[in-house]
Image (cartoon, rainbow, N blue to C red; front, side, top):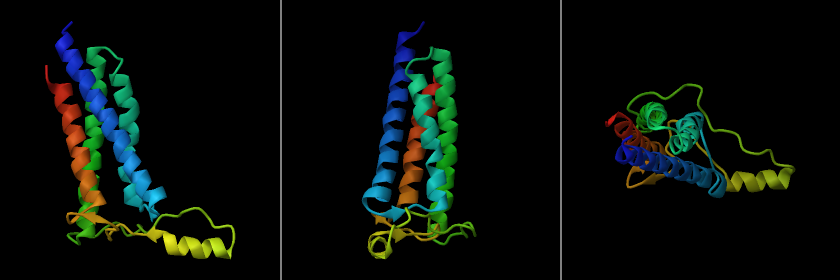
Length: 162
């Protein structure tokens, strides 16, 4: 058994775990803390992270061969997420059309008219072709593409490296 290789795989699983958890925490902060309601694509872009968390946890405990497999699966899922995020960012920049059925998501239903008025003032509803927030000119979808690609690279190269 090559302990150096196994240690590298465990580190990659740990990086993947923390990266996925922190990315989802950021998404939830924007949603629940800042009031941004995610669109359909935003919610779909979270799916690879939901899968990466249990896969990376398995990668911390499985034997080397199975750890390679789960990291490879996580890498494939995150590459899909990165591609979806590129599509989303491209729709925001009007490089191509976004999905025709994509509008703002739904938040919690207000209990009365006063709660509804408050919700209207604090909730920012976005659609798939409008960037709700940018940092250095890059939207959340663009940053998600970068993060998903980096995490896929970490998981994939660790899984493939002998």
